[in-house]
Length: 323
Image (cartoon, rainbow, N blue to C red):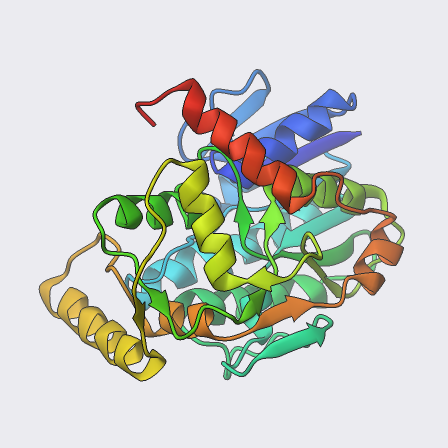
């Protein structure tokens, strides 16, 4: 197949484009800066209709990953990348007669803050989603699924807490803070959470390109809920960093996150604060998902268990101590 992948400079986008090419697909990638992949590349902003239109021309399918993924920053940036960008992708798919759009979303689009225990993919709710990222992704998912039908079949896939070698988000931030002694456990650390090894998430997106399902959202994870404290400690050990040895009650962490957000907003800082209210809630609240519908619909199952993922991450760090 001829497949366009947007956002291939990110960890999951790169893994997905590589997996598609490995199975013999003709892959084009679209992102703002070179991805360094031996694939046809179109450089441009995902919110630029002309750039997206050029990239989508002649494609059989599009896997749309490009997004602003962060916990801070002005709303206009999330709106531009996540909502306007998704609209440009949808319009390009329709204009080019693309038969399949896999829209990569997030479980946070349906998370209002309460514990999620063995649930499926609830409806995206921009009003209840917490934080600019989650709200913008909820709007984007609704926009994408509304385009299902006619020449383009659309499915939304929500990978949950994807991690792996070179991950600047989950792994990178946890390890950096652990090495400076600024990584506490929020609450007891006993809340069960799902995570997803990057190659498993990429396999799910590849499966979604040809699966017969469309018009719905599916959550993807390893399906191995673990206590959040255990997951964080395993990531730290893999990187040779000290695991957290102190805990902070959720109310105190929530207050600290609110203070940090206020300081960052008032001073215009663009780096990521050490804690936010969203992050505090995520670290202290259970969120794991029933994977039966996902596996049935995609004909997919994770091939790398979490413990093997931790071992692979440890080998990656050991191979180059400068990491």
